[in-house]
Length: 294
Image 1 (tube, rainbow, N blue to C red):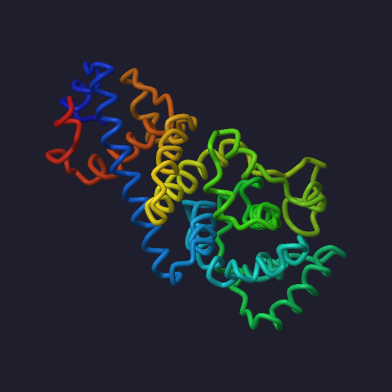
Image 2 (image 1 turned 45 degrees about the vertical axis):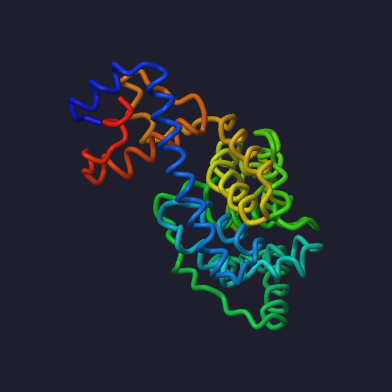
């Protein structure tokens, strides 16, 4: 955003021009996300639940552990989670055992019970765990630690209703928060990692993270699913949700703040991310929609 011409154009843009720019750019970014969903849908032999499940894991970390989360969603497929959905202990054992992280830390009674359950389920489903070294723990904050995230995901998946049904039924930001702001089981209230006590604090997925999941999972999933089943009303609901979810506050959106442009909702923040990542960062100024709309 240091390009003088670009900065001058943006600083002098009218609100109507910005709205057109944002609508165009957000639509392009959403279309790419929908295409990614369809790619995974084909890879899963057209299984919407496994598709949702894989994208959920992909969205848990966009940094160093992104690949590890993706691998785990293949190591422990959703169909096994469904078969064990009535037992939160079993789901935690599947995720933590399958990740390889269950064997990285000291044991206490609860971790021993998870290991015993993992051994049983690994034999039952013929599962081979990942290596603990597949995960990167450098610069990981306690609340974003993979072990804690997996315990939170286990609580999210401990539900009799299919994950895809719960996602496509979201209509409001509150629905998104209620879906994703799940709290890990009681053990994790006093632990960030196994066998190491912490202050007694409920460990739940926060609103900010749930909003990111709403933007990157719920909205594009609803658009893709609506297209697949031919239900236009669902796509309209998705776009309405897109416009009401809070804007992201990240290094991309903050680059526009000095121009007096602060995104008001998810559509606007996604548009800014699209412009910076697809045009600014790639030096594609001649193709940038800023030149077209401003």
